[in-house]
Image (tube, rainbow, N blue to C red):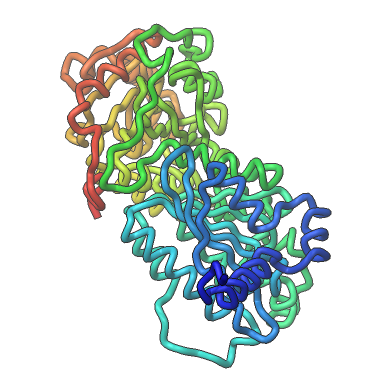
Length: 498
């Protein structure tokens, strides 16, 4: 008796083709991938998703080719990350170098389409050679995956992991994502060394062309670098934990033992003399819940620290000057980093905390050649357009445009505006040679006025209050509690104006 009622041959054929697809590029290529200390595409997705939750999409793509191109070099589907649904796709370098064929291009767009339709985050894991040379002569009219990524921006979180050499079309997923992390042995570029040599005559290695020193520290295309695949995937999971699944949902909350009010031990961390440097990161760790601070893009524009954390159980975005780096002076890279960070935070409804301690934006010919005015103006515009709760604290000093970009201006939509005692404000430091004040008595008088800014500011309501530094956490929690009604779903474009 036929228990399969005639379905046997068809079922066997599908199972055979699916089994072949799971074999990816074959044992030899998979062994070479392991020897490099890297996971294969399916292993990467298994590490990303909660165990047993992955459902594959388009597994049979490429199965009809002769010879078959398993999953067309791109493994994709959905699963859960910390219990929440997430879509993901991983380039399979063991199949034709992870190159992009017509079928895998369609699969990439399908991921974007599903992410938009179901309102879930999208993670893309890169290690591939760009468009497939063998299909270059087969143009056609089809939806573009890059357009799909752009349409998702600000609607669902977009994360990109660069886990090997990534070139051409696939590499473009990185700058279109909200957050990008790469491994120490990875590289990313518009065109790889062979094409660069052919087009320009330049002979260069992939590491020098687009390794971490270029992609992270110089170009800023990638936010962070980690040791290996496992670290990158863990960092992606941690990043997603700070965001809602989409812009229609409220940011996540995390309740625990350290979500209530407490004083913070920061007097020994912040010297009262505004000319003395100090690192801001230990201060932030002292203030946030459980000391758990997720710093984003630490190796680029380091005079501003951008970080995610939970504060009173609420997910928040923090932008803080770091006086240990050029006294906290804001350069083009720092302004560009902070602007992008705030755009993402605002899009997903995260309250934004600004801690100001800077002598202004960077001056000098190098700064002007880097377009400091343009980058600083963009940062100012982004923070001004935020429609999420904004909490500002002036810690010690804020001069000129450096105060404006850190959300200190009145009528800038702040929920609370606070200051520490003995802050110093002004267009520029009175003691500076640039002040154009020759009379030493006049300089001293102006310096005294600048140093009395906290008292004068509170007297004129430029600041809502002057607080003891040890009450920093409590004051921020009070501001967040005031804005509780706005700690919710914003909808696309409502957290930040276009």
